[in-house]
Amino acid sequence: MVSKNRAQRIADRIHEEISEMLIFDIQDPRLSGVSVTDVTVDRELAYADIYVSSLQGSESAENILTGFKRASGYLRSELARRIDLRTFPRLRFHWDPSPEHAEKIENLLDSLSQENQPTSEDDLPENE
Image 1 (cartoon, rainbow, N blue to C red):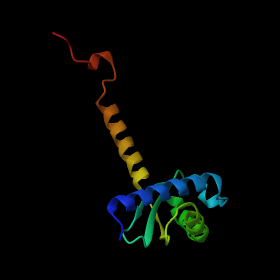
Image 2 (cartoon, helix red, strand yellow; image 1 turned 30 degrees about the vertical axis):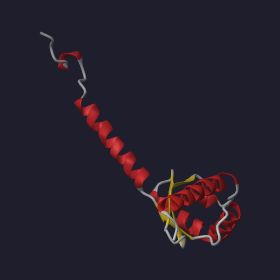
Image 3 (cartoon, rainbow, N blue to C red; image 1 turned 180 degrees about the horizontal axis):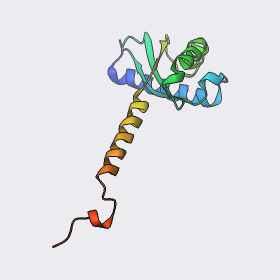
Image 4 (cartoon, rainbow, N blue to C red; image 1 turned 90 degrees about the vertical axis):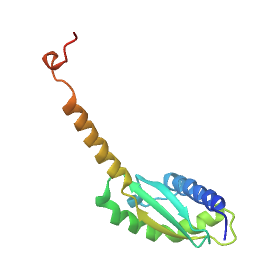
């Protein structure tokens, strides 16, 4: 079992390496425009949970996760080559809906702020 700090450092390194691999190494068209939002590693280093999101939205989540599942063997072996660990954790990919939720909240806040803004000079409060 490793410390929380070491597990976090390993997760950060996996995040960095997979992000780089998505840009330069992986040719699968299903994985274009995909970003890694978070990586967590359990303290036994048995599993690395990788959370991904895409500009295309959750409509393409199933297709993207299938692409990652097919590429997981390559990704794991390449990560094991780049990151020096005795045994490398198994990769599990998950869809992260957080960016979509954040965008919806941002749009709601924008619409609320536009509703509360005065539309003409007549609506402005008078100075006494």
